[in-house]
Image (cartoon, rainbow, N blue to C red; front, side, top):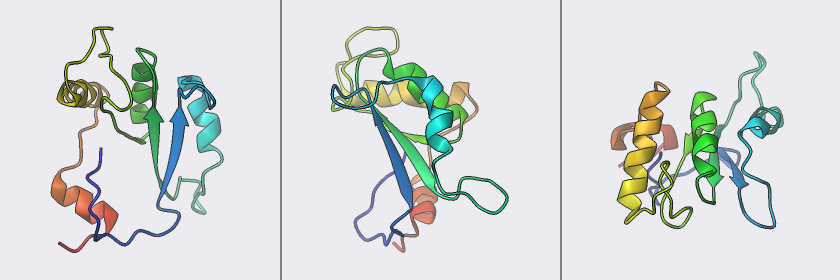
Length: 127
């Protein structure tokens, strides 16, 4: 999860997005992520050389996709613009509830959200 700061100067290949779950787009299938990742730029050692993120849109199907993305080292985001539903299938009352659920999921797989300072460093922002 990142905080976007307008004064950042990002390289053109800084972040790659995989948008899933949109009716006219790619389905939200976690098992497709390794295939998508194989198309991203890599270092000479074979590591992915760009930040990447999944934008998952839908109902309960977004949560397995978020989990797999986090397991594979990607970034995630959520909010009522992406889903109205919590992992348990209940309707979220706020984006904050969705963010709390995503933080919990990240912690379950050994990840944590970037702090503001970490985000600025990742994005190369001088604030």
